[in-house]
Length: 373
Image 1: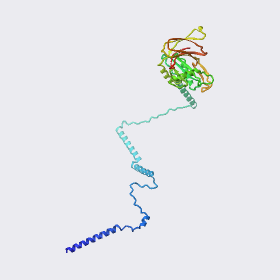
Image 2: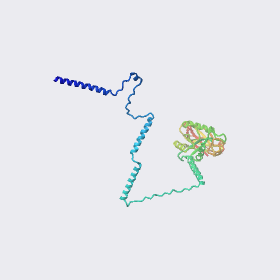
Image 3: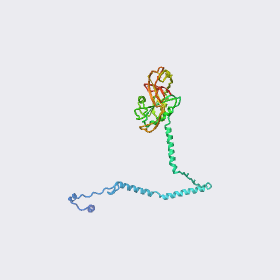
Image 4: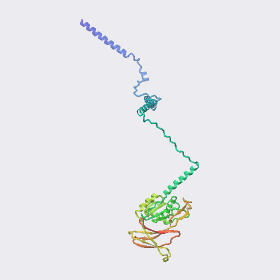
């Protein structure tokens, strides 16, 4: 009996396992399509499954910049939708201000004041059309004259601060020289200044020239002394040591300040009796100086020359030239020992006076000077 039961149980278990396997196989392959021949598979590749997209899809018609612009626009719309309405915010502000004013009026009813607006009336300016142009022209002219007066006003060294020898190297052909020539009027009238207007001949007019070759030679000599500066006009040389542009007051002031450290000693020129000689004679006493090599020069200068420039850059200009050099004579050398020198020379006509200069050969510095007018 026990044997029959065990056989029945084994049979039922085998039947159940067979049924389970059969049903599972049918369920798994019930949706499988019929078998495809190998030739068909090779001729036509089956489509691959579409991959999972982690980024937004961009169609062919929509480029990347367009997509970004669309996303930004959507963000802006979302931000605007979150902001409160402008009218609502304005209305809230109006209510807040009105409420605060009402509270202040309730707390301080006695201090309530009405503010009155000040009425400002602009002044009425009446301009006559016929006089406007004339007024503007006169004002411009006055401003220009005032500026030119200040710009061309010569710098005058203080009297008693030293003796100065000014040599202006100029020419009638130079367009900038008339400004410096005009300043010589002031310098020529000062008692502690010897002013010499030396016209060069390397840059000159063709008619009515006042130039001398010695003036060009002196300027060329200064070129090697003054730090190798090239020649130019108008060049003002002060005491043979410093130079400046002849019409610039600030440059002249600097040159005077520098020359003040090396003052020029004053020489006394004594006229001699004309009966003793056929030529005008003068006597100069040279005091003791350090041993060295010095040159003595006699330079004569004219009375003011009134003339009209005939040609060149300044053609047609009427000029007055002061202390124009008409003669330059080398008197000899000196070694610095005390000496009395007698000078006999022919002075040209129209001569205003002359000066005696003692100049260092090595440096070009003028150490002593005297004049006779």
